[in-house]
Length: 288
Image (tube, rainbow, N blue to C red; front, side, top):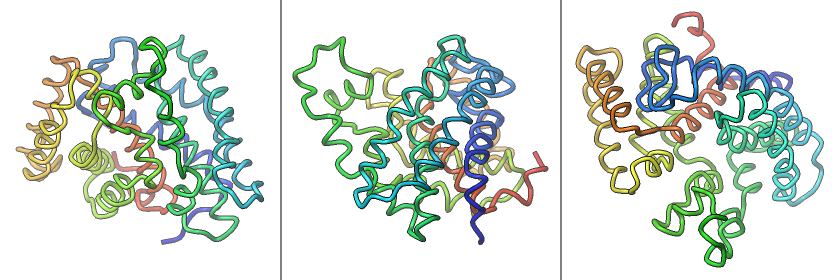
């Protein structure tokens, strides 16, 4: 499997975001057929958001390719302000709706790390780990001294449930993506839509989605979500009648109960990005 040249990194990041929102039907998420539990967003909101972020990912490529220091945590510190600017651009494009804040963080890291790793012939995952070393300790330090209204949703979950969320996932080198979702994507069959649906539910079955916990109000929702996703996969996933029926049922339950899988969507974006880089979804990308 040959990795594509670094010149396509920013475009592959954009494609990954557009591929994710195009997959349907996605429980707890926006897709071309439904807004799901997100009445303030449509697929067009996500398209506008993704397009607004292309300059950011181009900057991430430049930062990764140009970095010459020995401490990769400094490279991460360099791109964080770029992410803040990118979030302003996103909100300007979406009328202040938060569509891709998680992708700005995680996909920005992967794009930057990909550029650096390619230039220096290093392992991508190890590069990510080196960039994010000490992230959770740094970001969660001193939270007890903050007032409740100063805390982000992720910080509140950490204090209440000990969930490190996307920071912990990133610092560990995205194990859900590299160990679970990407292997599932590589082995998947069917149309691209079917393959990405099954990959998404693999992510749901193997991760703690902080968006889901926030909407449910309790981490008790996580084992339930894991079981639902495992049941879907055991039924054969999107290519079987029973699996598809399970997916439609989950779609209805998530919309009825106002549950979101925004964190899982972000991890699907990362998986698609890596799949595009490897070429594992190129050959059938015309077949939706």
